[in-house]
Amino acid sequence: MHLPTNQHEMTASNSESSSEKRLSTCIEEQSIVFDGAVLLIERLEKAANRRELGDPDSVVQLQKSLEQVVLAQNKVSTAYAQFSSLKSSASTSLRSGLARHEQKLKTLVDRINALQNIFETVRNEMSPKVENDILRRSMQTAYQKSLKSV
Image (cartoon, rainbow, N blue to C red; front, side, top):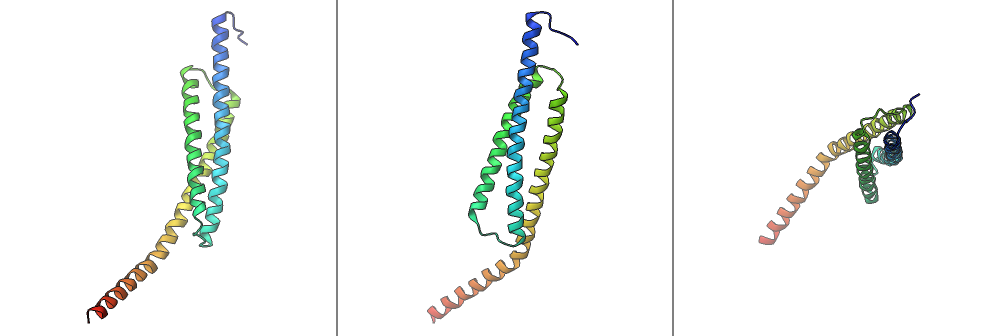
């Protein structure tokens, strides 16, 4: 094992340790945000599958959750930039944390894609009905206008 022999090596070692710890903490925080987003998206999926799409609070919650994901990602990016600027290798602990985090990210992306597919299916099912309603209303409006002109 290599022990630091001078003040410069000790300072560099402390910087690496501090930078890695900061990155690890940011990744853990982002993982918690990912978990929350996945839970929310899964609730939205269940509601969408039951065609319960009328809760505007759900959209607000989803938007806030995705904003949290972006904020957490910005923190991770900053911490990663600081860590990588030291050009040191990641510890086993950090590598395993990154692997777990990568899996959570894949789960989040899968859930987002599934929700998007559900919404597209609902839109496709509703489009003909909406178009028929629009056509019917247009015809009613035209008929009422024609009655007024007679």
